[in-house]
Amino acid sequence: MKLSELIDKIDAVVISGDHKLDLDIERIGASDMMSDILAANLGTSSMLLTGLTNVQSIKTAVIAGVEAILFVRNKRPPQAVIDTANSHGIPLLTCPYSMFVTSGRLYAQGFTGLNGLR
Amino acid sequence: MAALKKSFQLKSRDFIHAGEASISVQNMLKQIGIESALIRRVAICAYEGEMNAVMHGENGSFRIEVNTDKIILDISDEGPGIEDIAKAMEKGFSTASEEYREMGFGAGMGLPNMETHSDRLDIESEKGQGTRVVMRFSLSPGSRENKTGQSA
Image 1: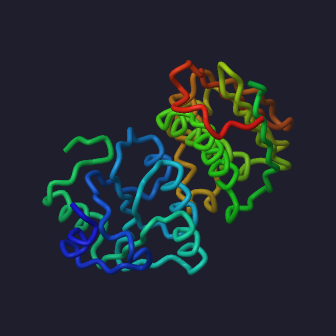
Image 2: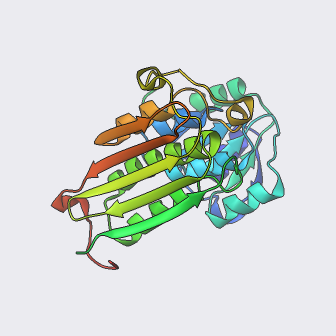
């Protein structure tokens, strides 16, 4: 599903990376522990769902090859973190729901976990 | 091909810049045409090691060497050392500070992740003497997707 379409399912807004909204997302990982994301057997076309808004969430995405980040509960990272995401071409989104509800809504849309399983 | 080497100094508890050495290594491996699955494994090990050295260490150093048959990551620090290496290897065991946990690390998965993603992990450490973590990755002829852009 394209990022632009995914946004509507969870009432998300784009923080940065407007030009990346045609990215196709298939797999989603939800965690505040970055080692869990790094440990996952990642495929392509993946997104990170997290409440962690510091710069390490961006670097974890870069290292793990995650292509987009969605922050839950309307969280927004500081500008320096947004700048880092922009420099690596990673779009940032935020949505009003909790990690649990956001995950449930996205799961219902057919997304898999980072390892491709449901 | 001559070995390709690069080294970085790591600043203790500089969480703003932590991870930059690993991202630089990731880019370097892309440029020399290493296959993406192997780059991913090296980058994950580099990042976990870099974060550990920044968190726990003093005067950290981070070196990568790419030879014809292997990639070596060598990360060392002059920090407090690891008292019980076997214990430190257990999933979930952590001595991380609250500050480190707030960064999304310190769940006791760093060393296990490094062991999983490298072909060989060696840890030298003594309490009060710092820590050295060396990770090796085998390079087979198929590990290079192309030969362009190589530099010594």
